[in-house]
Image 1 (cartoon, rainbow, N blue to C red):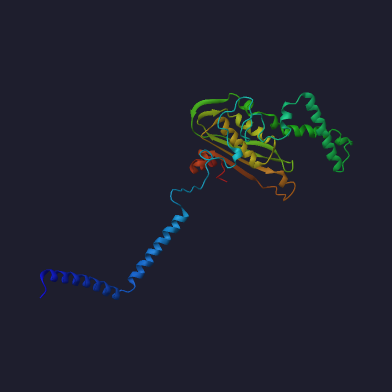
Image 2: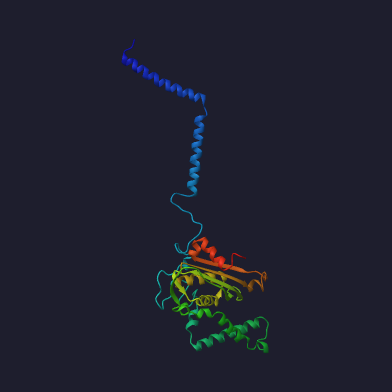
Length: 307
């Protein structure tokens, strides 16, 4: 006979041994249970790591880039943070208050030239046209071409008169506080411009729409702004963007949308010679870019989604 304490100790050891034996027996009965649990745990960990790699913690993926809350697509196209002083060039090359959208050598001289300098410029350009006629194999002295060099020189200066215009002079004080916050759209504005790649025309229609932030602009100013930028050597993509950014900067609406539809003679008279092709470009900023419903409303109002 063992004493009471010994008996108690013996019983305790017997209980432990019974638990161990039970675990061993259970393991013998289900030999794959542990490996299955390990496999499920590894699969769960692997899937979690894959999710973490796709979207790290604290990172939110966005499909669109919003021009108001983020920087512009091109750093050169960022609007100036403050209103430029009178007589000071705007930091934004998209809208230059000297009248130049893309500053280049010689255009400022044309803007400030005297009548004598203007006559000298016309004579120089006429001589260049005469040289072109000679290089084409024509006789500039024959009756039909006698006045052509000067006529063409004057026409080219007219086609590019947008270089001499200033957006401040166009808008002036035609911005009015009307507490209006719904779409204002001017459709089917005729535009005529010269493709800077071949110096041949492209013509079409421009649609301009904006949602005011209480202030509205005189509606005739929108076609005038379109004319100012189109009467320059252009490409359609840049023309669309320049008009949108200019209105955004001078009016500061909630959003602006510009759509241009045009036919390019550089692909009608030459090249692929496709007479029915139409090129459509758009630029949307602010809430029109940010909200798909607002953007679709704009496209519906100008009839773009119904074609």
